[in-house]
Image (spheres, rainbow, N blue to C red):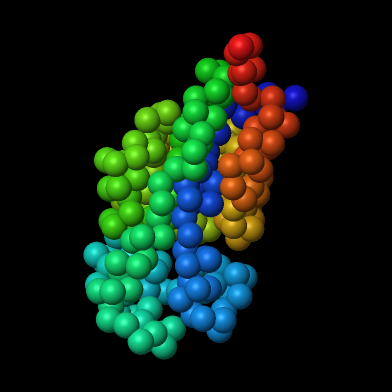
Length: 209
């Protein structure tokens, strides 16, 4: 059964609802110098990406520093174009799955993102449509797993962390939520998310054909 005290279901975007290929894309770009876990950890710890995702950079510094840090034989602008192409939009059926959540639960997004990807997710793909609120790190000025990102979302929603259940694909972000007393589940991709929501019993049953 669902946790009775939880009133908000909070979702990461990339890797949970959205096909973000930043890890596999970086593995390909590095031509064998990184495996998937090394690529994931690079993005989580790369200071220039943090600045890009917390509103301190329009992407120019991020791209220049990434080319240098990764030893890439390409221009910063070329890297930024490749980086932009790794964001493919919501997984097929993702928004429909969110719409099946029982109306007793509020729904929100908390995404580590940037001013390149976010406008496409909102304007082109309408990621925000089935949610009460969609929070972007570059607009909040705080990025998961920093506690301030979760606190800001809870403050904006007027809810205690213990009444929010968070879903993310990165273990560090799950740990950050747990540190604030926020229930959280690691899910990688839409099928794992569907299974987690079903286990919590928060979905309306599918209509019979």
